[in-house]
Amino acid sequence: MKPNDIPHQSALRKGRFSESEKWYSITSCINGNKPLLVRDRFQPSADMRAAQIVIDAMQWLHERKRWTCKAYVVMPDHIHIVVALGADQTLSSVMSSFGKYTARKLNDFLGSKGRIWQHGFYDHCLRNDESYIKHLRYICENPLRKGWAEKVEDWPFLAIEPDW
Image 1: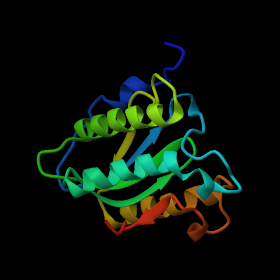
Image 2 (image 1 turned 180 degrees about the vertical axis):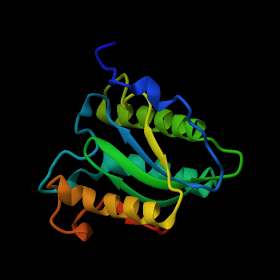
Image 3 (image 1 turned 90 degrees about the vertical axis):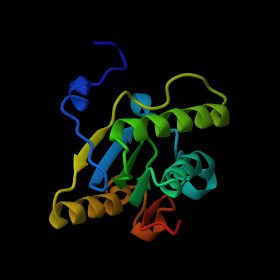
Image 4 (image 1 turned 90 degrees about the horizontal axis):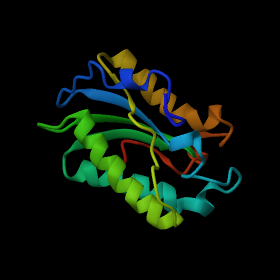
């Protein structure tokens, strides 16, 4: 195993099946779990540029109908999104586009080079209303659980049904 590899990461791709217009919950993590996207716990909106790069990329994919974004949360070292794939799209192709674009923009912004995102991503097909609601709730509660906000509305990098 390489130093930056995650145990079982090769299993992230095995058996992955993408279906257009199905809802998926996706998690993608920053390489090394470094807090690159939000750095100040007490003034998260003071450091909006890195998180905004990620949000802008999500919006771009949404506007071009590569996916429909229902919800997202950008945390310091990872993101959670609930999306439905557009026609003829695959999770791998959309996440590859997202990862390459945001890595280039984040490296430019941070004055760095190299890998931004961990290899692979986690996905779960939301097959029923119960699973769908559970994942939306998880997104909303993530900043609270991690101690980054006291109320959902306090976290500036979270949206349910973004107004795009």
